[in-house]
Length: 231
Image 1 (cartoon, rainbow, N blue to C red):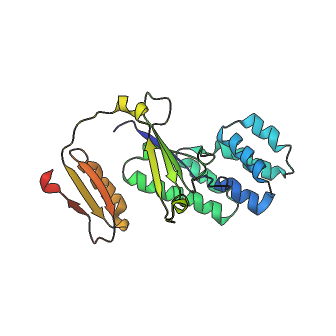
Image 2 (tube, helix red, strand yellow; image 1 turned 45 degrees about the horizontal axis):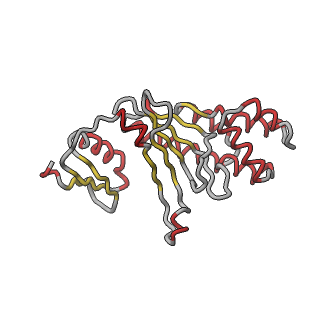
């Protein structure tokens, strides 16, 4: 639907792990405590620049270390910001986080969504089980996100099955007023190999104009649409 937007964040924390940019910085260089890192992350997440600057001057950091933290609230915006973020990366792990977002953006661009995506490397989750990327969705006329989710690779282990996962929730009260709820009778299943993910998503977008579409990634030789005769 035209006008929808999503922004993604590279930083997360899961359990006692702070967002990846901050936790890796703490572990590798600055030796900051978990409490200090948590407060820093909150200030960065809220873009509270004056408080962040004042707090950094109370910590035993070098000037270049303070500059790293002061840059994080500004590392948000369109995909061009990711090039700037690479200049702030001080090791391969941080570079890999940014490069993975660049790869994600390239795939979204191939699907035609490049003008609806922004990134925020200082984002902090409000649930402590996330372990990877975070994302939120917005629509015009709504002052808050209507969709939010992310990666949580350790959560299912608490229920006896250690599986990686990614998911999201939709805030129905916020999104229903702006949706065009036309009934679509047929349901199609689009099966595809992972290597052709972008092509499959592009095909699914076209099919969804007239039908419901379920996506199923697996060991397929080709992209297969099941149920087309009923559509």
